[in-house]
Amino acid sequence: MFDLIAAGLQMREDPLPVEEIPQRATVLRRQRQNRYEGVVIAESHPLFIMAQDRSSHMQSQDGFPYQAAAPTLEYVGVGRRLLALIIDGIILLIASWIIGLVFHSGGGMTAGGDAWDKFKHIGPGAALQIICPFVYFIVMEAMQGATIGKMALGIRVVKLDGSPMSWGASIIRNLLRIVDHMPYTIPYLLGALLIGTSPTRQRLGDRVAHTVVVRRR
Image 1 (cartoon, helix red, strand yellow):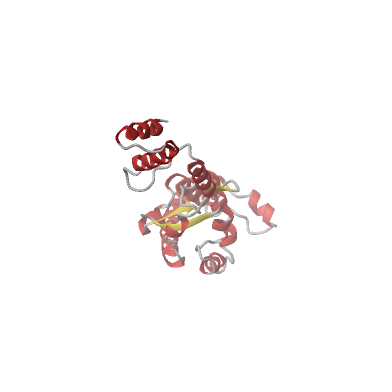
Image 2: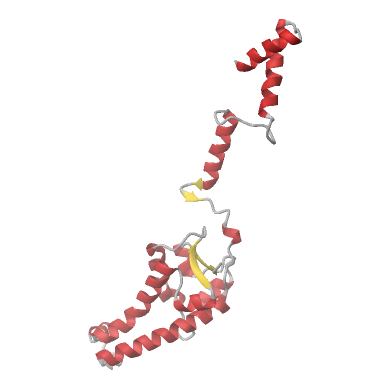
């Protein structure tokens, strides 16, 4: 509307045929929009709305966050994770030794009988020694994203999209250490093989929990 008025005022100085007034108004409107770099598209313009819809679609697809940032993560292989596990193992051995001293437990299993019979004779100290590693890994990774060993090596556990760990993901990831630890004659051999064959360096627990181990930035 204002462009038509401006075009009409210009007619007084530079007379134009009436049918050319809308064309002059269009030129004036484009000149005003091009005062900044590029062509200004109003937020109410259909093209702008389509762009917003496309952006939101890229950020969320099938209910999962868009993972465009995932390739920027630096995945960690077996070597550094093994060193972190050794540090954590030393810490847990010390904790287990202290528990044994407090509860005077030396394993607490009887020599004979089946597995259930042995389990029934486990004392509170031995039960704590079994539970302690799981609690340690679950709590540390859920709250800090890393155990003490991982912190020392500069690595952490995150979700596939790079977001912080959740309690649910930490519980799933660390309970599956029981499987990744197989075979027990060569601890974590299965986990190491899965990490080595995964492009995102995931063991079984990582794959099920949708987590990855990355370098801390």
